[in-house]
Image (cartoon, rainbow, N blue to C red; front, top):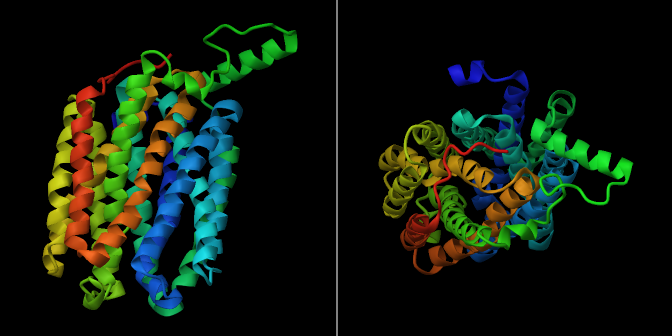
Length: 419
């Protein structure tokens, strides 16, 4: 951890803030998947309707990533993060008040806005606070916080759901709102953003007719111009495929484990399901962290492809099993390969775009991909009903394979210094 000790305190606080925000994001968002079988039973939802709620959340996340990416570029990374955390916290708690499909859909859409916004602002904050030689590890630790939040959610569900019901689980989702008090007091904006913001204010005060190109506020549409268009299209499509696979997997694995056999599941108790999901998060966390370390010494492109191919093979295998011991043993490997590569996406996009539009570009490439992936919960839910979970997870696995193939046209910008 020498890279951590030598980093400035400002950079360390930025990483802690972004990591906590992302962990709490995972905690709130994944409560739905973990309580899905109970929600289906009480509200009388079909698998297709339950999947649609997951898709609505992802569509909200896409909109939130675009909007809060713009907010982060114009008003600051930390302000954007605070607003997004407050948004997903309040509307997670509101989900506990839902009595109909449409009420749930409304609250999940607004929750999604905050979910998408947190990643866009957090990734820009960490990318600009850490040097190129340790950026991969810093972003990996930020991304790994998702596994911690997911595991915390599974633990809470295991204790709260059997005794107090699914509504109480969602009410606990308000707690991340208090985290914003520390962010506001302790976390500074990155120097790169502050210098640009100061230049713009100075130009406005002195009445400068035009800022230099390196300091003016660019449009997010610049990412479609010239040489940027091809790489923007490629990374957006690649991310759409990976997110389709991820949400197809993680949005339905808890339901697969806990639904009765008559509904296509394997009928495990809530406590057993919770333990299996928590154990999976160990593999997820190791996947995130290892990716950052490995890509600091090896080609990021090659490592990305290995992880994606591993996920494309292991996920369908997981969907073919029903023995709890085998699921316990295989789960961490599925999560390791099926999620670890996300640690690299923040660095990939940070190195492709200038500071003026970095958060907007990261928000766009991540969250437009999320729009396409919004079909995953509905698609997997529908296929699970008509063809069974094995077929449904095989379709999700094929998305990982397609993402691996996309890396043939994505440039390797690894180690590039940010301006």
